[in-house]
Image (cartoon, rainbow, N blue to C red; front, side, top):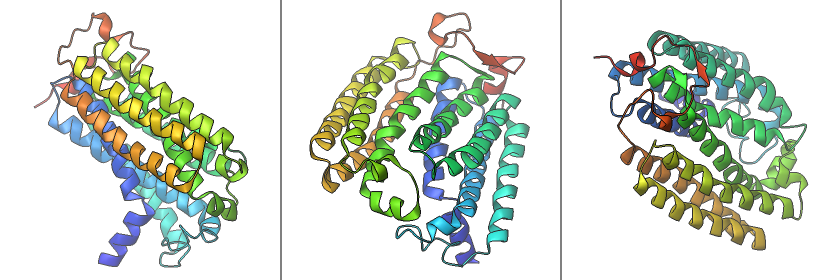
Length: 313
């Protein structure tokens, strides 16, 4: 049983799923603005986790033959033969459906719809694109940008300006994060037949430039979170300091493009996100004024009453 659970968690990419859940939870807390519902928050977290787990399992189900060629993935449960492919497919479908059921029962239809959209985009678009074009990274970044928006939607029933800014932060952050990782494993990706940018950009000039540009883009996007009143001055200052450090490492990677520079940029990206998100939650503006301009226009709304999901118990 212990081995079965371990294989399931590895198929589900549990560590990656934990990051997805973190961003969704932060989106929920920022959307709720000090008035969270235990039931809705728990449903958002559990439903997001199951949805992410299901999508990751189906991704590995699809890529089993290519994973078998790569050194970093050939010991995963499917290519190593520890889990039957049909069983993995069933696990993926059941887990993803369970996530959607939890979200539908505990949050709202907007959150559930966003989750369904991400699952389909990740499995049916991003996964096959990985062997066709380096632009797959952009599609993957869209998938990673939606979970904090799901959390916000669970809290408010709509997608305000703050939700889109959070999604923008996650979208932009993923580009230097993944480019650094892909540079570290560029030979392995090429061995598996994946057309990641570093696998086709042998000199790494474009890879380095894009990593630097997107790292720099985090500065104004994080500042926008304070400018719209979601967070305060403390977050503004802290996010800019963290962002400048991130940009500096992106510059080093552009100039050097060594394994060490890429590893430093990758590790910095892992540290950057939870630090910035944590400070954002600590410094969020708890005021909820439905007519105030700091929340912006609700671009999407499927819930009859925005505060209803954020109040409860």
